[in-house]
Length: 133
Image (cartoon, rainbow, N blue to C red; front, side, top):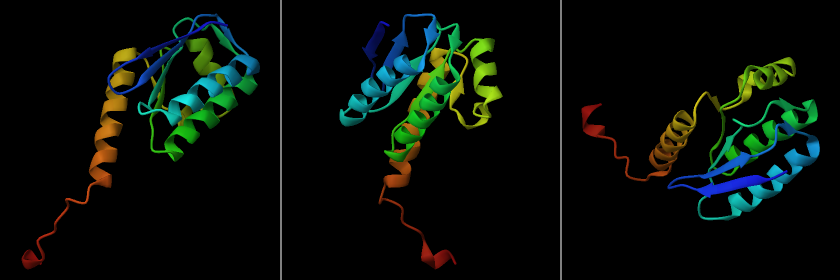
C-alpha cells in the first residue's frame, strides 16, 4: 500500500492511499511512525479519508501505536474516519480511548494544543506567590 507522508509545521501527516488497512499495512504504519518518533518532528496525524475498512487486529495495532506516542510525549491523532471505521474501533471497545477528529483541521488543532500543554507542563517558569497564603 502506498503511504503518503507530508511534513507540516508541528507534525507529520501520514495518509494511506488504499481502501483497506490490514495488520500488515498497520505494521508498515508502525514502522513509519517509529521513525517519526526518532525525528525532530515527532507528532503524527494519520489521515484515514481514503480508508473504507480496517481489520480488527489493525485497530489494536493503531491503538497501541497511539499509546507509544503519548509515552514519548508526542501526539498521535487519527482523522477523517468514516462510520464503518468508527464502528470497527467501537466493536473492540477502543473508540473511547482514541484521539479521533472528524477533520484534518481539527487534528492539527489537537496537535497544537497538546504541544502547548506539554510546553507549559515542562516549564520551570512557574513561581508561586507564597506571601498571598
